Length: 313
Ligand code: FAD
Image 1 (cartoon, rainbow, N blue to C red):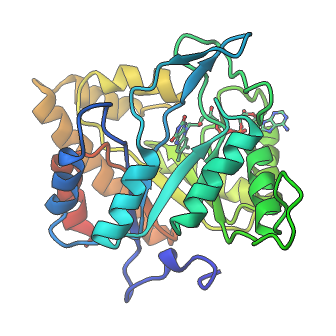
Image 2 (image 1 turned 135 degrees about the vertical axis):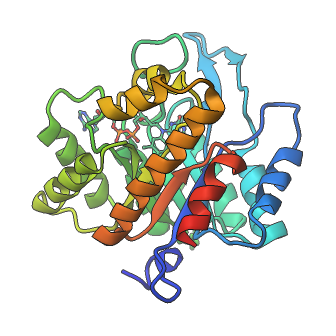
């Protein structure tokens, strides 16, 4: 496994730590991303994953409504790789893409040497109750994983003489507290296993605030025959409002005691301190448990992640 996923190799006995960042809003430029990377002070994460934000609303007549707030996933990834020499993992989603467009996107990543990706279905568009795939696109992340597998076999969507196979390594998302749309937790794990069977070689989880949820999920994955590394995703609470908003958006639970501690805070600065302390406890327990890596949903927020990194580095 270590040779297949070199970004998970340990330096000494240190557990690798990775970060997730978002591309900037349209028109804002990259200054904040440069400042964020420079604020890490030379510390190098195992990898940085960069989110993708759905492209277009597809109307019945195929009119494309321009509604992307955060374009630039590929550009940010290329900049981080070539300017800073960082290991970068772009998120690739199904939503908004026909399978031909997915192939084009993957060809660009291949040409840039961005050969490790996180393959996702993507969330429903803002305002929609459910996910609607592009009419010529993938409905599930497993279909995208399978498409990447075909490219790795040199099987492109056109007949090509002597095709050059791609060399992608694919990660997928897992949900310790179950994905919202799946009624049955066992079926959700089976759907995750389908992604691994389609070719995924690592899993990054949704955020969770109670490590028992992760431990139980990991156990159920192993029992279902999923043997790839499972990387826990950690989010540091930074505002009081997040105890309402995060469960709504991500369908996760925040333990009652943590909620109460946050509610008792006078302001967001105090809430962030509670969030940081909670994340340090979570991270230390996960590391002691032997996780292959810790993935921080950093939200490009240096102030929140630095105290945690200082504890763990
Ligand atoms: P899937 O694996 O396709 O699963 C979606 C649902 O369908 C699940 O309920 C699953 O159980 C079910 N299912 C799967 N296969 C089948 C089947 N064959 N039959 C019936 N049901 C099935 N979203 C973005 O838009 N951009 C991002 O950059 C992004 N980054 C993320 C990073 C991480 C670490 C995580 C955990 C999530 C991220 N998301 C992102 C959110 C993600 O796109 C959503 O959670 C989405 O709703 C599901 O994506 P998925 O890849 O897990 O989908």
